[in-house]
Image (cartoon, rainbow, N blue to C red; front, side, top):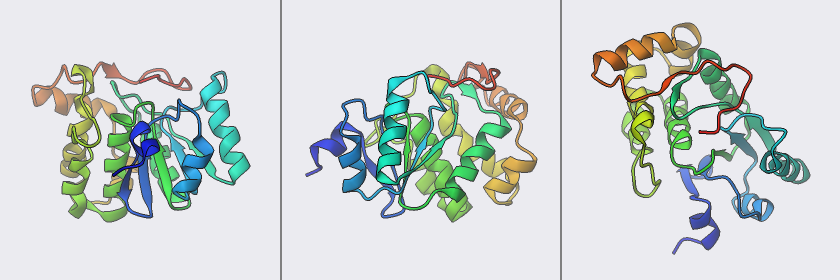
Length: 205
């Protein structure tokens, strides 16, 4: 039986002992939760939000416990810039293990980041594992119409990379405009709300 805290925070291991995923710790008790799983780093997918209490609380708890904290900015509805994705990859590389990926509900952006983590660390042979991160159960990924692009991204990345490592392709060739063109060609032009066009701001979803 899963612990109450794990259910409450939608906690799951992506790679046991190395990477995990979860929701925002809105109910508090973040410190004991991190300690229970011996988390060494938190990658916050909601971006830096210094004016919000949850972000200041998260930073404070991590600092007190010696847990590294990384801010990576993603939107679940708008296609990411190259910088957003390369900064996420950089956080994967810099974060000590075990690391925790988290957004608001641990369902959408977290599924996306978990899939990229697997492809980055294990290569394209982990595609089935990456796709599985978008499962309705147990991860509760129930995308709204403009969030459907998230699940399609790994297949797009594999096709466009032509076998090159994910991080290399993202750094040198990824462009949201090309992703938009591909989605349109797949008849999925309504699977996203637009390109992310507000650099320096933190999207809510």
